[in-house]
Image (cartoon, rainbow, N blue to C red; front, side):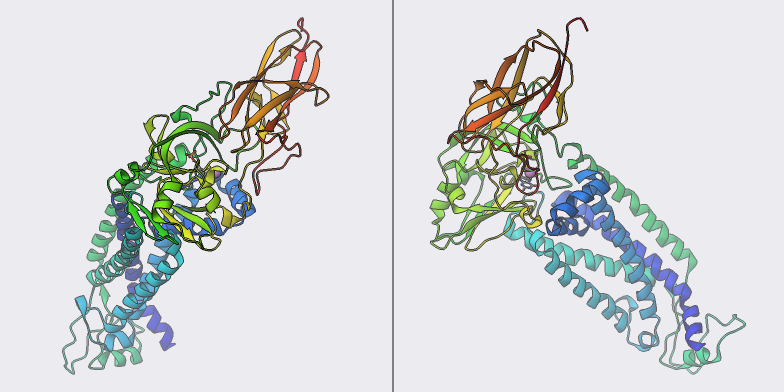
Amino acid sequence: MNFRRGWLRRIPNVVVGVLAGLVAAIVTALAMVVSRQWLGIMPPPESAPDRVAPLLDISTFFSMFGEYGGYNGLKQFGIFSGLRALLTVGIVVGMVYALVIESGWSRRSRRWFLGVSTPALMFIGVSALAVWIGFVIFLWPVLPANYIGVPYSQARLLSIAALLVWFAIFGTTLMLVYRDTTTRLAVAGTAAPIPNPDATDAGSDVDVVAEERAESLAPIATPISRRAALNAALGAALVYPIYDIMKDLYNDATFFYDGTVYSGEDIEPITPTDRFYTVTKNVVDPDIDRDRWRLEVRGAVDKEMTLNFDDLQDYEQIDQESTLMCISNRIGAGLFSNANWRGVRMQDVLMAAGVQDDAYEVKLTGADAYVDTFSMDYALDENTLLVYQINDEPLPRVHGFPVRVIVPGLYGEKNVKWVTRIEVVTEDKQGFYEQQGWGPNFAPPTRSDLFNPRTNGSGQNATFRQPISVGQQVELRGRAFAADRGIRSVEVTTDGGETWNDATIYYPGTDLTWSLWSFDWTPEEPGEYRVYSRAVDGNGDPQPSEARGIVPQGAQGYNIATATVVSRSA
Ligand SMILES: Nc1nc2c(c(=O)[nH]1)N[C@H]1C(S)=C(S)[C@@H](COP(=O)(O)O)O[C@H]1N2
Ligand SMILES: [Mo]
């Protein structure tokens, strides 16, 4: 009974606690979006999903795509879950704070900073500290992210400091708003009865009144409705600048271009830069200040090095054409492009640092804390580059400005963009997607596809969009790609594999690029035709015929398109 009444008397305080918690959450959200926009620091609503994504297995990851509307839908879901969690935490912590500060223990205690009691201060301080430590541990791998290019080793410290500042802002705002919204009627050390806020309450509990009379016990704080309205208005007013900054971040977000494919009947040997396919794990990609950017070479090397952009130019400059393809590229699809890159050999940088004997592989990190790894064989291969130009222009932001890795022979994910760190490690480490269960082999099998005439569908179930007439000459065109093995020849069948004809390789490229092929076909009878190609790589090995999906090592198999040939009169 007493217990219940005690609670009931504190309901107005709990309401004030909720208000204070919500305002604190809003002020914290504002601090977070400001830090993200101008300091490039990744706040928990963004970093927590990023931390969790590699821990999901591939099927969960893909089923979440289905549920939330693709990778972009999932990214938005992650952010909004984080913001919702922040508001929920605000409400809950505010309620608990009100109960703590209005407990007998607290009201009997000394008051400190802004009149906050020892237990209330301890509650905020200890929980903020505990949450901070917990976040630092949990978010550790993603803390080196900095979206404006603060170097790796400083970025982690900056993120750790930002977490502390955000939590301190939360706690301080909560205490301030609660304090500002309530009043504690004076408790002089007198024997005079202390005015009881519940005095007018007919059912006022005798025991509670007695408790209030205890000399050293402060009364329960009384809410001031005018201050409550003011603080609520302040909190509400801060929603607008948050919205405004989030709108800017949204307009800058990857939603508009992530998953851009290079396909169509007009595939060129060299992909125009603005049509180069794009894949990113980020909600908003790094936007790096080149002067601030550093490449740190660390780990099992004789001499750790930190290079700036100009230092990198001291190494021999290499021009190299090579093709990049995502592991998620279905047979016949366009997460697949070819460009002229300019950069320096990773080998030269690693040799300057001096690779030690126990080196196992390189672990590469981007400014977005994306991590991937590959063996020393690839790291020291003369074709593996640190590039800063694509097709004679500086790398665009979305492709990794100012510097990215190009490692011919491996899927796109190993080609780390916005690279900030090369660590030579002495044991196996796993990359962002590898942790989900992709791989372990990241070398693409040989494939060939058909891009002209256009088809619907991909893989073995494509169909030509337009019917073909008997006697009409059709120029079939496609790509063939064998990672770093090159393409030796391509054959085409128009009868489901019964007879094969040599295709013309009209663009051979190099061992590191795709080749483009063509074949003129003039169907002589109406009917349905199964048309496809098969390539032989530079080692003389044929393209695998057995179809497989993209999970876990990338797709393979023929790109089979069904053509409907109609008689000319039809
Ligand atoms: N830092 C960083 N590098 C990254 C990624 C990323 O999200 N962050 N995505 C990878 C993936 S999965 C692919 S397929 C390629 C895509 O490169 P592109 O967008 O320049 O075509 O970049 C890879 N490098
Ligand atoms: Mo990818």
